[in-house]
Each structure stands twice: as structure tokens, then as C-alpha cells.
Image 1 (cartoon, one colour):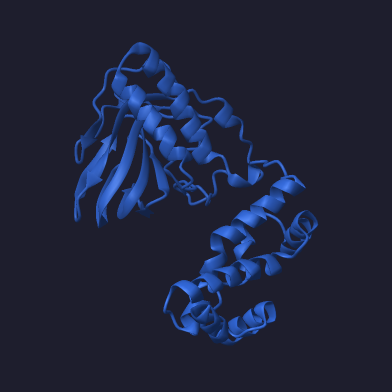
Image 2 (cartoon, rainbow, N blue to C red; image 1 turned 30 degrees about the vertical axis):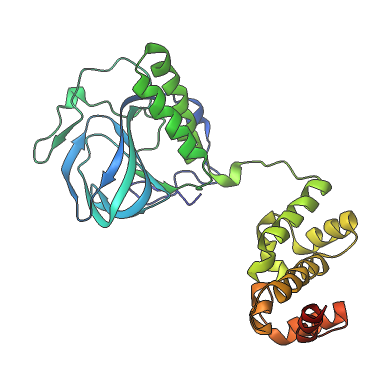
Length: 303
């Protein structure tokens, strides 16, 4: 996750900042909405009576809160505080957003409207300010698009629309999980180390998935969370050959198949099999089969 900033531009959730404030929240959703904004849409300046969580799944728009501005894009979120003038202008639409109006604590609150449009100011006694332990100001950050937040949002909206007391109560827990996942820094998440067999099969899956895409093996294994040398050692110990030898064999098998089933040129066969250099492809093919790609194709045609 990128840093989450407030009005002063400081990092709210830095490595050394205590996280006990997230242990103290018990958020209550008040209003839920999601849908598109068309291109060039402008949401007028307004003041909220509660907090608004906004998650962007598509498009781009300018968010202005007080005297600060952010370029909001897909995969970003904002938590807009109450009683602060804010404005939204779509820059690249349509913009798809999910919005949750909420209070940080599930305590009795006065009856109140959603917002007051500028220049009318909100009625102060109806505004629910954040508790003192919550970082003040607008929070803006980004989240990993791995489907977790989207699934939690779908569940939250489904339960809210059901409307019965039980599901409305369950919405509180769902919103709390969303907020914690958004605001908890990724460098504080402790992930268990993978076993050797798990890592070996993760390497194999990465190679199988990307074999025909080309590129070096080191680049293909960059996202496994361990060093390239360690990944190679574990893979060799489990399967008896190096990742380079394994992916080369996979690519050569695909090349053999294409030589027999297509009319692609030798260079095209090499490229479609994951070899970016035709000379290197021909060299490795001859080392493996004893024939050039052209001779191999001719033998298949006369067989």
C-alpha cells in the first residue's frame, strides 16, 4: 500500500506510529451507494455530516478537500471527513465508485441530512466529528486489487440492501474489516514463509504460466518474494533441473508442435514459443533435437 496522507501531507500510518487506534474503532455504516459518474461530471461543493469512504474501481477524477487536491484513480480510496468543503470533477470517465457514509463509533447520533451544499454550512450540532484517537483530516491511499476488497464490498452492499436488523448489524463488522485492510500498512503484515515444496511449485507455476511470453527467467520469478538464487536452488532440489533448463524444454516442445501444425516461419515459431532471439532459438533447438527447425519440419512433412 502507498502511504496514506492527511491535510498536513504527513504519513499517518508510518512504521513507528502506534496502530492501537484501529483496535478502538467500531464503525457504523449510515448510507451506501455505488455507481458511475459520466465524463465531465462535476459534483458540487458540499459539506458532509459524517465520514465518507470512497473506493474507485475505474476512471479518474479530481478530489478537492479543503485546500488540498488528489488525482483519484482506479485502486485508490479516500476517507473524507465531515464539515470540510469538498468537490469532485471527473477527468476521465466514466468513473465507477463505491461510497460508504459512516461514523467511526457506533454511538447514538442525531438525525441529520447527508450533506449541505456550499455556501450553506452544516448545522454544527448535527455533525459527528471523529473521535480524538482517529487521525484527523482526509486520508487518501491505494489498495491491492487482488479481489479481497471487492468481495468484502459486495457482501457489505448485499447485507445492507437486505435491510433486516441482523444484516445491518453484520454490516458493522464488514465495514470494520474493509477499513482495517485499507489503513493497515502492508509492511506490518507478517506473511508465513513458504515451505520448500510450496516454493518449488510456485516457481513451476510461474514458469508454466509465462513460458511462451518470452523474457528472462529471473524476471519471471521476480514476484515470488525470495531471491532468484534461492528459488533456483529449491526448484533444482525438487525437480532435478534448473528453472532455465525447465522453461527452455517447455519452449522447445511448443516449438516442435508449431513446426508440425502451422505454417509460421522459423522466426515466428521461435517468437511464439518464447524465444526473442531467432539465432538462440535455432541453436537450442539443434542442441536438443540434432536438427535445425527447418530440417525438423521437413522430416515431419515427409514422415
